[in-house]
Length: 108
Image 1: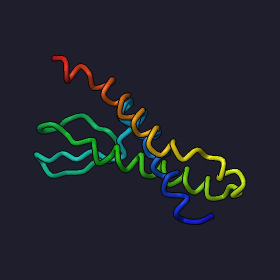
Image 2: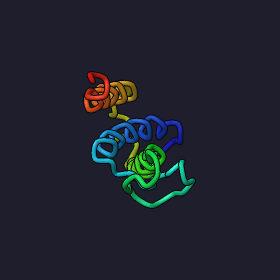
Image 3: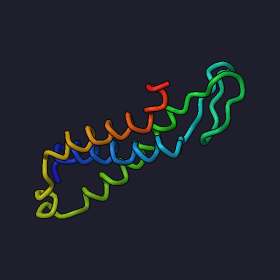
Image 4: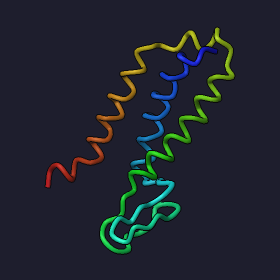
């Protein structure tokens, strides 16, 4: 399989994985900027607000790499059937979901 055909798969997989990772806060690491420390997993605040975003990105990226590797093993006859419109449709749908789960921050 050509490498160029795997980039859209990674983008779609990353977006699909990011939504539940954000919703359930499955962060791989947590950064505490006030005390300049990193911890594995999503841990409670220690001094000031923690940053989970790096861990959320890492979790989503690892999951997307695994999905992309599995798709790379599929025969090209199957992967040609993937609709290219998913490359933009899935991230837009995930963005709508993220706005929906963050609505309390916008409405208060």
